[in-house]
Amino acid sequence: MIHAYNEQFLDIIQRKVSAMFELAVLEEHIEIDAFAQKFASSSVGHALEVADPVYALGKSANELLALISDNEPLDIETSSYASPEYWVGWVLAYAQWHFNKPYAAIISAIPCSKILDNYFPYHEMDIMHSMDLIAKYLRPVCPLKIIRQARGFSQSQLANLSNVPLRTIKAYEQGTVDIAKAQAETLYALAQTLNCTIEELIQ
Image (cartoon, rainbow, N blue to C red; front, side):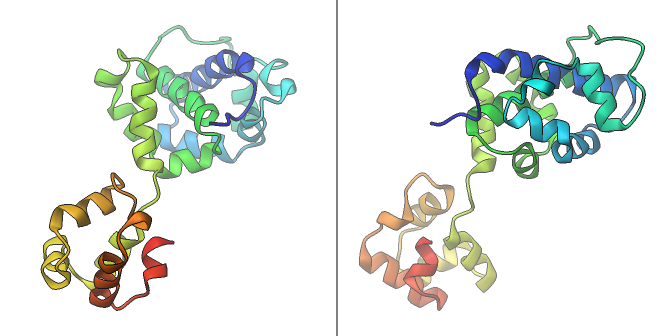
């Protein structure tokens, strides 16, 4: 997997993003998802996505937060709560580096409030468990599920009408089995039942 930037910057950026989230939520009383949106769309967020040294190395978390909020920097340099909000920033920064996706794409798939909901027990686990959680939300929705739902079929109804086993349909929709590798007759049966093309099922 190609990561967003050189790993030598990762710890620095994680600490700054974490401190910004903690200060924004606990000191400036900004709701976590509202701050995440502001951060992701800001020049600061975009710069940290590529480890721009002016932002990653040249400014403190407090200064970066002030740029995002368009305020004067807080009197405190950083907080020391080691809070759940700090952990959210830590996980978000790692996910951006790990998956090489914009912050906006990550928080669109899984809002920071949802990450925060998983503080227990994930904060005690290796961070890769958090990446596995986020990966589930980043995984694109299977076209079969979208088309099936648009036609108003349940999985069971589709299985009965197409003669494709229910467990097979579930596996395709959950992404545990790649529908693009399905047998031709299975794809044909699904396409006929859903009144769509095979290409639409595997795109």
